[in-house]
Length: 308
Image (cartoon, rainbow, N blue to C red; front, side, top):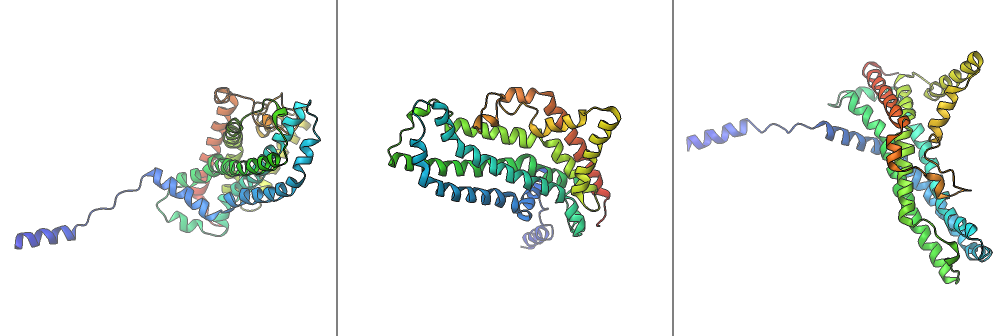
């Protein structure tokens, strides 16, 4: 009995050590924290989707009349008629999430110094690298995926409502000719969001996060004025505009993410390049390398920056 009691007492006095938390788990929970603290990341695209849906419901009263006004011998106008609401919905939601991403990046590291919460977050067992990577993952990965999910959900509702109205009115869509299927449109949208808004724009997001970690006030001005000043100085001194052209290529997708055969507002505008060509493009990897340099600088700045 004494032996058993001693064994039990010894076991009770030496409880099992807690399992260490891996870096992957720390990154996961850091990303979750960003979503908890910044609800606009998913509320903004949802709000835009609701507003668009309200406007689309109003337009349904005239949808059948617009369809009857299109000549049966004009497949291009039929194609644009079918595709227009989907493209408009995608562009509106993408525009909202780009604004959210820009505001989020500028405030991500600046805000925690301004409200002095950086003192609390640095007391947690989460490194500066994990913190910066979690914040960078929001515009590069999370926002494109949220935009895709919200847009697809809205597209499904639009498809069901428009099909019901047109079928009830006896309007046939046989004159529309061949057009991308819903699945093809979804793949094009996903490629555009992850490829352009996430990976291609990675150096832009990295630059904004670095400025957010460095600026003591007015991070928006510090993020934009130096770029503008470099372009002006280059133009005055060398009479060239290579820097402005480089920024234009980065913001527009380098002419590689939009199709030259697209006319008007079309889903074809979103993509014309294959996934393999995009992955092999030098501009992508140069941009990712620049983004890595900006993020490394942001990590170092956060390590030594004090509250404002």
